[in-house]
Image 1: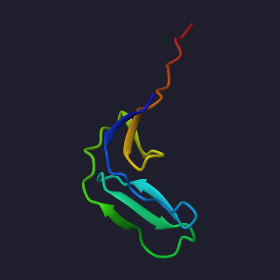
Image 2: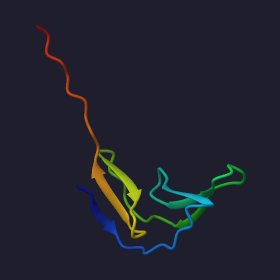
Image 3: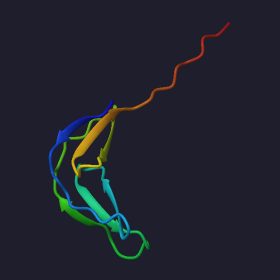
Image 4: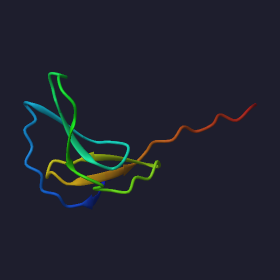
Length: 76
């Protein structure tokens, strides 16, 4: 379902950090304790498209999946 966008092969430590892609397309990590600022690991990793959800997959690469859309109900 998801397609790889960029190969990064990040070594991750999920016990200490949360990994995410911010609004600018940077790959970041933040301490799970919530203390401190987020740290940018890779700048401008992807050019974001709002119709996709971007995430770090199990291989440490950037992947994306199509966002779910709501269907409008027809008036009876």
